[in-house]
Image (cartoon, rainbow, N blue to C red; front, top):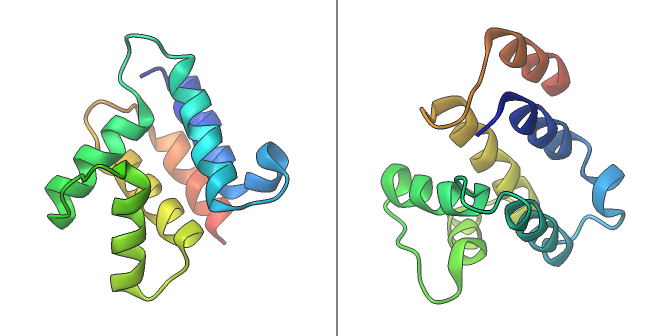
Length: 114
């Protein structure tokens, strides 16, 4: 994973409507699959997310894939799917050893949160 890809993903997570217009589960899933398609053999965001959910939250991937894992966790947390997706992605980015997350990005992330 390259640093600029992480920066773009963080920007997407905070400004989804700039990328997908109508911020729906289907549009987010489509965007993420498109982002993965462009990566070819590199680690894919959705694969890393699914693995993260299995490890951190013990929610196994089923035939319906990572969107279903996000749905299950969102229901457990009592939040909307979109909020659950954003929460999980940001948590994964900050904890993953495969995704560069510099101090500058951490500060930027904190600024966007507020």
